[in-house]
Amino acid sequence: MQIKKSSVMLLLSLSTAAFLSGCGASSKEAGVLPSDVAKVSESACAQCHGSAVSSVTGVSFYETFKDSAHFTDNIGCQDCHGGGSQHNGVGPMPYANPDQAGRCVTCHTAAEKIVDADGVQIMTKKHFGIDASGNATSLLDPADPTSEAPYATYVTSTSKNNCRLCHDPHAAITPQHSQWAETGHASTDKPVFRQFDSGNGVKGGCGLKCHTTTGFKTFIGNQSATLKPFKTDPNDTTMEVIRCDACHQDYSWKRNKVSGGAIIIPFTATNGLTSLPAAGDSNLCMGCHIGFYSGTVIADATSVDGVKFEAFSPHYKASASIMYEVNGYEFQAHSAYTNTGLKHNTPGTLGNGALGFGTQSGACVVCHMWVDGTNQNSHVMEPVTYTNLAATANGRNKIDANIGALTASAVCAACHTGSYAITAASLDSAKQQFKAELDALQAAIAARGISFDPIDGPHYFKDATTDQTLSTGSRYAVNWTSVAPDANGKHMAGAAYNLLVLLKDSGAYVHNSRYTHTLLYDSLDYVVNGALTGTLGAQGATLTVGGTGVTVANPFNGASRP
Image 1: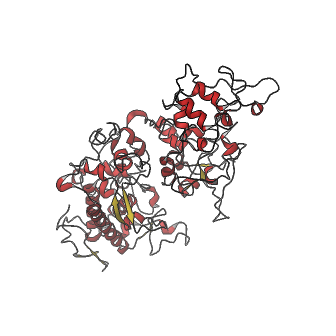
Image 2: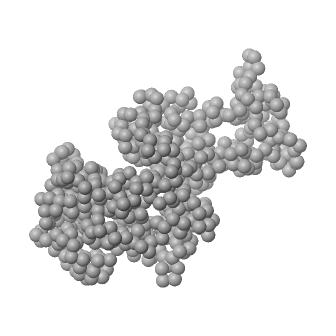
Image 3: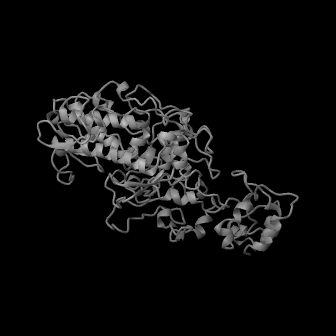
């Protein structure tokens, strides 16, 4: 029997004498299948459970249920839990836990398409990597029938019959679900999920920690644990994205905690730290946005010549390392790069409760999730919006775009006041300065005979093209000593490292401005002059890359080092 909204609304206004916190064990009378148990009036459910409170959220089941699409579509309690004719307040329900019993997929199939309030499609074949029987499916890219990599999906072999990892079974889909699905953390067609999942041991192990939810949860539970393949079937083709349960304990949305309370630095830090300062909830972000290596891997190497640059690559967006000044290639003593006035990396400065966050939020959560002074757009993760953003990924999309609006203005204004106030225009000006510095360094490195690919590793090549199909070995083995202006191969490779690590973090100029600008200044100074002169001249001055005849314009403000 379908639920009657009027009867539910009436019963919600009544004071009930008693309620049950659960629906009893799942069982059936002899000869009666759970699916065959007869239904009773839905009003009978509300009579006892109308005031029942979820042990997970602490909120009334029925209050949240009223706002759900199930309620709107006249889907009642017994459509999920099974008929209640054997229950009578104390007996079993056919499906005490409908999710675990696989009831969700009887309606929500791989073929279903659902759109949210903004018309964004949020339920497609990409949602499921298993069929209703729990068998892995191979969802190849329809735009590329020859593709061997299936789509990553939210429901995989490791999360089947566990929709509660991301959904309150009695509540509506939240805006945050749709927001997260549109970020790079959960884009099911991204190569980082489709090609590097290593849960079955077939693909490389580098993907476990940050390209699968299961691997990430293992990591935050024990940072010293050896991450191993977790799939039991070697033929399992399902690929995970970063699901809600990577960061959240359950659908109460309480956040997971990182073991030890701070992120252990997985490389030799340039400033001597072995762990990042404790950052509360932001530890969850920093565990992956710390990178693989620091510039010390180059400084400490016996030789950098003939080594594929992937051996030094920082790996994608190492924002936490830049903010805490632990990963640059430093040509001088570390004190020459420190930003002593920076508050972004000072524990306790951000997340002090002034904007509604507790003291344990940390900089990442405060600046990227409190984007408009509320939490309504918290999972967009962008404190700004962009104009003229290129649709096709080229490794520089956000670097080359302009800032259109500052959606995190309420957050910025909490600290940046008076002459330090930040607007979209001032932030875009700072970003254009950052872009000019990157461009100048890239041009200077190219003048030394090294080509650069910002997207695909190993990123650097010893000829004028980045076409990786031309060969597979010798072109990658750059002899950095031979192209260095003073035969210091480590300095030359270090300048190339700084270009890569800072370009990969399009917000580096905000995360730690002085650290970013001084690394770029010294890198350009060295590649152009073969030494650290500290005086590149006035902004716009012509710089001749020594011995090459190639010139670049000095992008830096002022006549001396920042």
